[in-house]
Length: 142
Image (cartoon, rainbow, N blue to C red; front, top):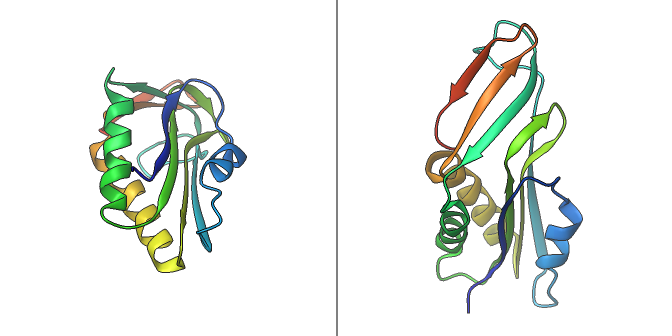
């Protein structure tokens, strides 16, 4: 049985509590989370960042599920992960990951592995919008 309890891409606001509930299990003594939020700056931006506009390939949820499963590997971790698409304002949640496992080392390792592969392998692109109206596309995963 897969330890992936939730792997979703949505244009609706993300909720950390939903992810925590999805991995709630009495066999797990450790829970780690990662929340990626839209920030108001970027090293490549000349003015403040006001929004990010995410778009995704139609197969993105299947890919997200596979990445979560790969991060778990043969381990006992449970994963809930979501990525948001559409226009996000500063402070909005773009990615939420919750990982539960019997022990903390595995929870941290799976969470870290998953966010790193999301950044490199998930077919999601973002357009960064700056205060002066300048926009720039950022590559795969953002």
